[in-house]
Amino acid sequence: KVLGLPLQQREEAAFAEVMSGNVPTFWREMVPITVTDAPAKTHTLTYSVSPDYLSIGSDEDYLLMPLTPFTAQRIADGLDCSLPTPKMVNQIYSNAVVKLEPSPIPPGATMVTVPVFIQHNETARKQRDALTKQFPLGALTAGHKKDIVISNKLLASPGKVAIYGWHKSDGLPIQPVYTGHTASWADYSHGVRFVSNRVMLNGAVKSLEEVLSDPALAPLLSNEGVMKQPRYVLKEFPSEKPKSAASTNAPAKIRSGSTNEEVTDLTFDPQVRIKINAPGHLDPKKPLLLIFYTLPNGNTIEHTVGKVVTPAEDWHFNIQHIGAQTRFLRTQLTNENVVVAYLESGLKSWPAWRTKNGDKALPKIIDLVRGKFNGFKTSVVLASHSGGGSFIFGYLNTQEKIPADVERIAFLDSNYGYDTALHHDKLAAWLRASDKHHLMVLAYHDDIALLNGKTFVSAAGGTWGKTHLMLTDFAKDFPLTKTTSGDLEKHSALNGRVQFLLMENPEKKILHTAQVEKNGFIHAILSGTPLEEKGYKYFGDRVYGNFISAE
Image (tube, rainbow, N blue to C red):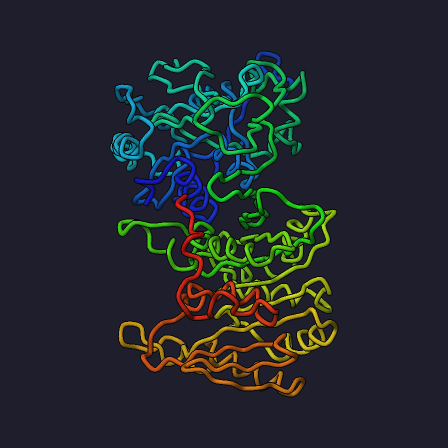
């Protein structure tokens, strides 16, 4: 999947896979290491480390994944972990029950490429597999990679990565602490090992940062004394050229030169990944339209944003194009700052995430993103596709009444979770409360659609059935007008503020993503406004083709 991707996209894919839980079972349980300040033994400290370097995949098929410190630190933050110091790397090697021999590959231009990552991974795997019977996977393993480390030397080398280790069987490292590579460097020999931020000191729980910042305790884990900066402070994905200290400490944004956008990456515990896409320049004189787009099941943010793809690339990048549709919207909504916040659950399924975590945290996710735009007059849109609708219904469950600044709720074939008793009265009251409030529902006749010759959605449980239930409920509140155009049936009320669009399906196709791809997101945002179907047609040809990014 990542063979042909540029560095940044490769690392975004790696980040997404790790945060979604695509790591081996053996890698999930940390291993404790206990150290003392010999010979006095005044302090005894226990910290926990991952049993091997960061791996993506399963126990049977995994890749030890080299990363830049930018992505390594992002993942560490998401897991409430840190990267080790050089002294900790020594301690880890000393405590490892499986000590593998370093296997250098002659240096060259290909050492930073995925094929060489795979080559070295196979070498390390053969060494490890030979010892699996004696030491099962999950036993502490070291020696086969250099570590990305934290070091005070980085203070004098901003925009660089510090590497150390690759211990030989005599216990001595091949690589002394080295800060000569820029932070965009990640070659086959680099490994990423995580250390829990919670440690046990003399029987009491402490934070790792507390220990590393205390002159009396830091020597337990550091040969450099107090760690003045116990983390990487890169806030922007590193370019391939060295950066100054000022640019290294820039806000957590990535500017895309081809689209003049700024992208901010956030994580929310438990296991929620957020990407905020904003115009390259936010006009403080204009109000802000903040669109929350909750992802369909099984899709990453990158899939949802979309890009130009070749026939050999993952087809998921070419089925939604919310990024390009957003760029089209910005050409229409010129009096607003249009911002989209993509919300991806770590399980790649909002229904599964809610089953595991409940609904209590959902308003906090909304508030986290909203807090990035304090000072703007902000209107909120809750939009979703597929299982993403579960997020919206879960959020509604937490609200006594829907906040007034939520001006639009859009279900793009995603209203599976609608429940009359839980949601109808709240939605109806919200619609009555302001003539700025819009409800949009897109659905197709899914209970007759065929997958491998068989139906896969029940008459009541799919969006076709749920939309008819909503029509029955809302017809009691608002007079609904029905119109038809070809296979499209439209029910509307309140001067178009309420719209249910139902697509018949005589050929029994799966139109689940077609509703989004065929200008569905654009229509979800513009329906019921003077811009409805101006310059585009719902379920028509893509009007955003020129806005699809190659990145």
